[in-house]
Length: 152
Image 1 (spheres, rainbow, N blue to C red):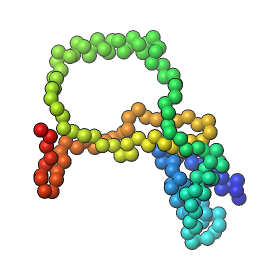
Image 2 (image 1 turned 120 degrees about the vertical axis):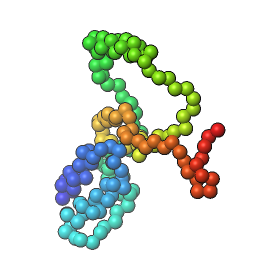
Image 3 (image 1 turned 90 degrees about the vertical axis):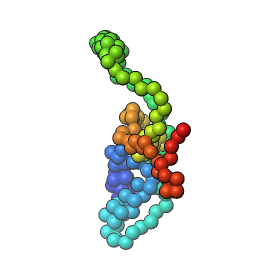
């Protein structure tokens, strides 16, 4: 049973790294794994300490994501040549582009503004997206007593 349970819990490696949390694994164990293996309907509560100990026992460690070196071909001759041609085209278009000077009172918010600490398996390398995905642009804040907040 322990091997089967380990296999189910180790399915964590198929979970996106930003969703690998002890809380999520605890809920998965209490709501799915325990009822399936015990045949009981009542809920079993386990502590987060037990979950984190189990993750460590299964070869996972909690750590901060660091950028590793990887090669993507950006120095290949054809890629360098294309980039130089693209830069020349953009310089030619510059005379047709508008330039905006001045202050911009807008903010961008992203959900889960980069979850840098994740559970990773020993030897696992994670390639994260460069961006944080879709965001929400806010150009005005409103206060109930003062109305729109403006910077001057």
